[in-house]
Image (cartoon, rainbow, N blue to C red; front, side):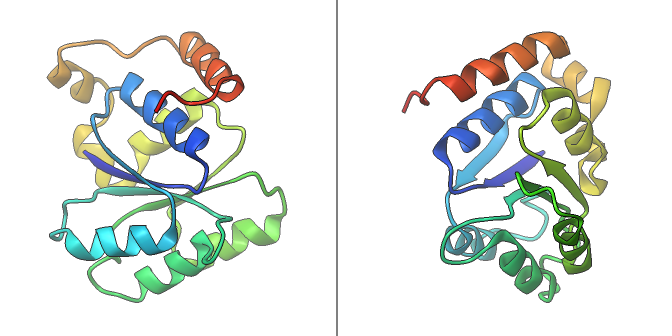
Length: 160
């Protein structure tokens, strides 16, 4: 499954990439702005991007603004978008779902929750769960190990 990660924080992009790889997802692209995400999506063939993890707050253009614009375009209507944010207000949750978000994850991210929400996203079912791991010839790592890796990743700068 191809997953697009859009977050202005290099640390968050790196952490999401590590967590998703540990959960068995290999086709990952990380971008740091709404403009980059829009350009990337417009250059892809239909169905190539199967899920977008989108930060709510980004400079210049928010994830919510990007989501609203993309969901107006028939090419992107069927792509599930999971919004990611540290915001706690319910109005933000309501805005995200009204704009077309499929799901919502609060920061700090919990590895087990992230894996479960990605696995349950509408277009991601074909590569989900045990079948996905079996196809990769490996088992997912235990949640507690992922939690420790997430905590370590937040304390240390990413290796670039």
